[in-house]
Image (cartoon, rainbow, N blue to C red; front, side, top):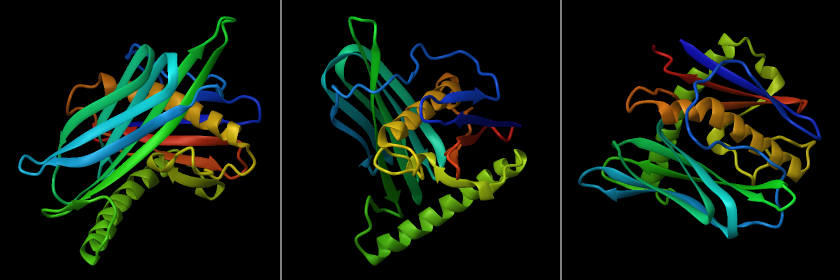
Amino acid sequence: MRKLIFILTMNTVILSTIIIFSLKPGAEQTITYFPLDHAITFKKYYTHIQVEDENNKQIAWTTFSLTDEIIYLRQDVALLFANGKLVGARTKWQQNTDSIKIEEKIPYESHSYWNGITFHYGESHYANEEIRSVQQISTDELFIGDNFHFKKATNKKERETEKLLKQHTNHDLKVKWNKLISYFNINQANYNEIALTDITLDKPLHFLNHSAEQVEQIIGQLWEGLYKNYLIPAFDSKSGDFDTYIPLILIDKQETHLIVLFEINGSQ
């Protein structure tokens, strides 16, 4: 059984990642956090999940991001979960561009709850060999019932469906997360818990003792670690042989470190 963890330690100047397991090499390009470039911004960025073909039961999964100018490197990393399980992991990178778009068609089943999260990233290289980075996060969700679907509940039927689907998904995730917490003998009382899909740059993330820029650094290095330790195995896996769920982020209440918990092919 392959249970995985990595720890990110935090202070006001620099964060270091402690990897507690080895990884196979894979994708050509990776995510590397550099100091933020405040001269570059994202003009537009989104993740969209929508039902496209009800007859063939297909959803359209689309991500897009656009910076306000062409920069040295653009890369987006997109994850798609159905009922908490990873069903799609895609990355696309390109040099000397301002935009990245990922499009995919995914089959769906009725009575399913979909979450999508995308890390939008870019690097700007300057003449003095200085490298800076830009980043954003977008998310989306979709609820699919029996012959109907919606993003935000607007009536009693949809509200009941949303509640049921979320309860079912959250219960399954909690069981898996608790097994990991027990396996690594982690004291839950010392941590605040947050699912990866709930982390955006617009939320405080319990980092009350860190500035906004420090929180962006924490998130950037979190995704750097996720790419190397969670996503490369997903990108390298053959279809159907990669079994994993939404990672759980444990944030130390003293804000000294965070722990990322996930399991890959736990039934092997």
